[in-house]
Amino acid sequence: MAREKDTKVLEVLHPVCCGLDVHKKMVSACLIVQSGAGERVEHREFRTFTDDLRALKEWLPENECPVVAIESTGVYWRPVFNILEGSVQVILVNERYTKHVPGRKTDMSDAKWLAGLLRHGLVKASFIPCEEIRQWRDWYRQRKIHVETLGDYKRRVHMVLEMANIKIDSVVTDIFGATGRDLMELLMNGGPIRLCDVEECLRGRLAGKQRKEKAEALLDAIQGFFGDHQRQILQPLLRIIGFLQNEITLIEARLKKLFAPYHDLIERMIGVPGIAYVAAWAILAEIGPTLEGFRSVEAFCAWCGLCPGNHESAGKRKSERSPVRRSIIRTILIEVAWAAIKTKGSYNKAKYFSLKARIGAKKAIVGIAHRIAKGLFCIIKDGAEYKELGGDYLTLLHSFTPNGGTNTLAAKPKSLDTSWFQ
Image (cartoon, rainbow, N blue to C red):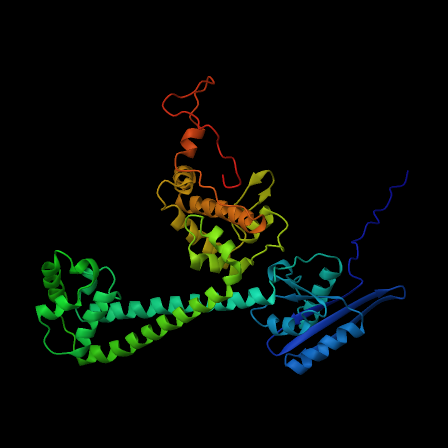
């Protein structure tokens, strides 16, 4: 009996589609149209000026093209998306999932390869939030950049003082607090500094019972080599620090106003240990207030980059590192997890030390971040409330003897909470 031939082919999901290879100055477009008369492939190039991109927008409907695929190349895809949004379906593709086959590499071949993948449904769309959420992202990320820049300038001030043998940070925890700033102001004014001048600078706990001892220690700490040269360097640094702090305050006021309609959701989010208002704003700015783009909690956690990798070959399990290398939401949730495990008597703290003993600190903190992500999914998607299980939950849960009896030292609680945040 003759062997039957395998006639299976890839299914065509989009008979008419377009692939866009985006660069800073030029966009290479490849349109594929399949009809009863056969297949037609058309190539075009457009400049990235707004009028030329409008011509691209008009060219696609003329050929009845409902969907286009764009590689996420830096920020260069955004001008194209701004023009095409609302007129056609735009699928943003991560370039690591669409790498071209080796050889014959040109802009047009890249566009044709991308269109071919889109035609058969072989591309995975990235999450593109709506315009309102994109504005939230811009404001939060601007704040993040200012905070990082502020930290850089504060470190420069520390360096200037250290090189001048000024040891304020050896006595005061934060030299940019009220006491530290007043002392730096004394140094900037020049002239001899007396003990009574230092005492007037003390604020908070430093102005308590040991006021004189602290003043004497600070007077010794500022006896260095602080001259005109150091003043000229320090003055612009302090001026920039003041400007950045003012900008951060203005951005936070703006964020508070933008998130005012979601006050109830934010209040439920900050009920989770480790999440404060700024962290809640950051999370909503990255994922949105509805999570309608995520079909399940597993898909959401995988998008956050908190799921272990799945790599097996020849029956051997290989690296289980997360495939996501750079993810802002992953960074935010891990920072939240580090804060959460410091909450006394919390389930997260007990679970962290339980995991740390088996898999180490770094993997354990990712596990806690994964659990927090699952909890946030239920809080945002299902409107759930956070339920604190308590630090002794794991102890009580495993407090039974092997023969089925009860451990008299730690009885099982009346109703163990097996909610979504276990």
